[in-house]
Length: 115
Length: 115
Image (cartoon, rainbow over all chains, first blue to last red; front, side):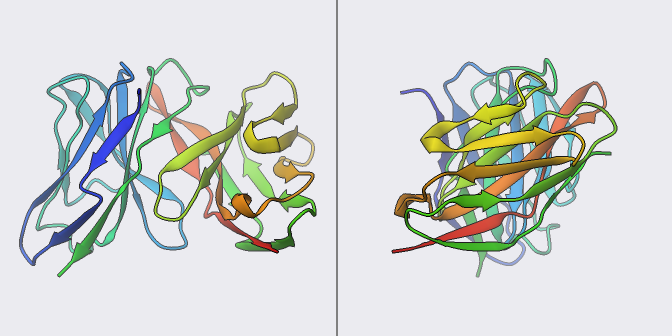
């Protein structure tokens, strides 16, 4: 079964703690993305990666970090510098970066809550 | 810069009646437009996309959308609502991001289907 998996489904963060959200895809897609969703709002882009070992900041990258060591994996770390991390985090991938017609496919999401 | 406006935050219909979810876009060039659906605590699923081919786009689950350049609209419709259609719907436009692109999301429309 091809798709995008995210884990865990729910994650709790204590004050001052870094936490890492996992995103794995077996679609052989080159590009991967992380979005944040807050209640009643659309999605906002945190980071994206066009290819292995390369990634770029999106609109709201402050307080987050990523890595792309393997094509299949794009983990997101929410650092202690992110003062308001409570949100629903969605990972997506697309076949490539060939243009604006590219479709992005989404994982099931991780809900991050602050204790 | 591209943008989308979803004109209704909530829409309520009776089962078996038509659905209309409204979306206006702003674009300086021919846009790529998408509709995604999100069921509670789930990821996003692509319903349909417009990429400058036919202006009437058919999607999954009986949904369709019509691109109207003169009105800068891309409204989503379905002839007969089903209980399983209750979800949040996002209108999305693709925007340039340096040498690549990103998705710009509307704020979403929550569809309620009454029995």
